[in-house]
Image 1 (cartoon, one colour):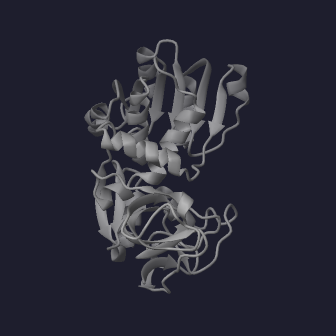
Image 2: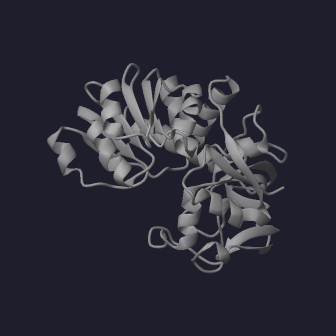
Length: 315
């Protein structure tokens, strides 16, 4: 099968596209013919070796954790799906080696959910990792109807979904983005947008959230997170998907901090599919590349200024 993989950590030049052995469905597994694979920031972080101490790994290492495709075969004691079923998945495995930048992948059937019918394969592949991250981050932040949430990086992959899920929960949503993306995040359900390029956003947030946000959801990290933490009310919550911070100052203000690294969850993907089928949830694919263009996809991802998602078409 054709696959995009690395044989050593490093820059985009390490990405290779060649034939590797086609996997087989083992006990409790499903073999998926992958039609499209989502591209996420974690992919280039793995490629660079930044996460090598966090996950066991073996080379050649096929990148990618998002997929949409069709069940090709099922292994022994795998009965939830049958050949021909359209599925999507956040396909992270305990060991980094078998990823979704390939024509086929075998994975435990519990990782898979049925693909939303109203989405193309490319659209469906853009959903799992980032939508689950947003879903689980809002769960960790205990966001309730009528509360306010300030989303840092609201126009990116996770932010796009967090805005929609927060609005569905009945929260007041404020998004931080560039001015060119303000109308976009409002169209997703944000009540207001703050331009991070115009002055100090802390003042703008204070004018919109007089007592501070009930929840600050960070999708940016760094200085943006440091300033965003000043926008939460005493007794509120801060959730970051980027980094763990020294929470001592937050504790003094009775602010709870949580860091989220997304976990596979097929039941949550089923719920997301229901929202999509009901017309309440959508995705935005800004760039589509072929498997041979994976280096270009990583180059775009590494700019840090992608609206929505990047997807590789593998079939």
